Image (cartoon, rainbow, N blue to C red; front, side, top):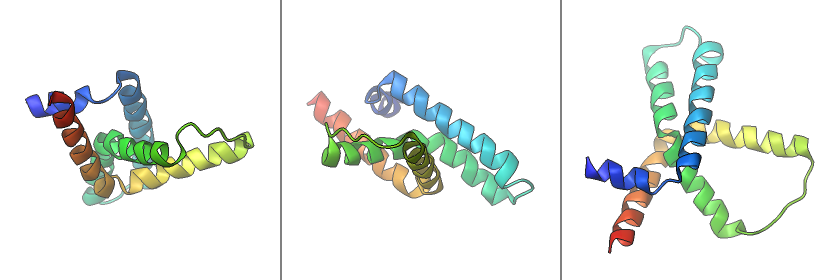
Length: 115
């Protein structure tokens, strides 16, 4: 139980709520509109992706911050929205593979902060 407490304590509460809302909203859309009448394995994939979505986004955001931290880009709002939608779709589709890396990242970070 303390492992989960340490993992979730590494998140900013606002960030965690935002990513869960995005993950659940996309899971709702996928469940009702994309995979309507799909198999049980697809429904399990959607549920797992919604639960693990914040762990995938923390890795993505950490990598982007590592390479582009502090860089300001001024782009068209339509391009920005398209980019954000593409990012969410790709993260949601590959959450099963990215989230374990995010969990390991948060466990290591919590161990370092405790030392």
